[in-house]
Image (tube, rainbow, N blue to C red; front, side):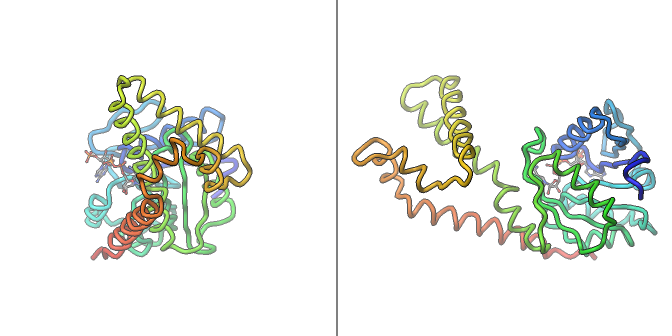
Length: 273
Ligand SMILES: NC(=O)c1ccc[n+]([C@@H]2O[C@H](COP(=O)([O-])OP(=O)(O)OC[C@H]3O[C@@H](n4cnc5c(N)ncnc54)[C@H](OP(=O)(O)O)[C@@H]3O)[C@@H](O)[C@H]2O)c1
């Protein structure tokens, strides 16, 4: 496929949270004169500005060079009934958590498959985009095209083994929920101390975004050292951290993330018939 001169057609199967986020980023690429056409098939979706909506998944697969599969795994396994006879022309980019390449190829015989694990901030071009493909499965042009797309989505992280997608799912795929949980805990605490919801949200969000911006302004942020910069002996931060029992806090997070990893592996071991 010549992705440099001809129009590249990118199909989107499933226009939900992630499908919409991907289309929003592809639209920015189109606006910056990248030669792409966006085609969408999603249940109940017939009109998306700047894209062509088609009525069936087969129409989508026939029209596309690349298809981003953005449906839930359980809906994907229903597609078995639609298995297309020859998908050799297709590059399937699956963002589904825990659906292995071997199972994707059962629905798309002969297709080239790339597995991607994005996260929610992809919506604003600030995602973590881990991806895996079997060695030499794409031409260098095809791979360069996809890497360009992923870099618009956020931080593009190539992975050497398919199973590392499960690890990435546990860390950065679910990561935004961990951050939102922490923010919510601080907001609830600020409310307890008498701040209005509005002010509590503002100060917590700025404390988080400002602290992270400060940390990344350092070349290699050393988070232990950064904590020491805020904490002084006998002070307020120390009182808070002693109450949290920091060692135990780290252990609890390790346990939680390991659980997420095991769950990702469990989902990945699902075999489509
Ligand atoms: N959300 C995240 O943060 C995140 C992060 C990483 C990876 N993912 C992966 O991204 C995928 C999509 O997640 P999501 O949160 O975007 O889900 P979602 O909001 O439910 O979006 C899926 C969309 O696909 C549509 N759909 C279902 N079956 C279909 C079919 N056969 N043909 C066409 N369209 C169909 C759904 O329509 P209906 O609503 O009418 O069923 C819905 O609009 C999942 O596989 C998930 O593992 C999500």
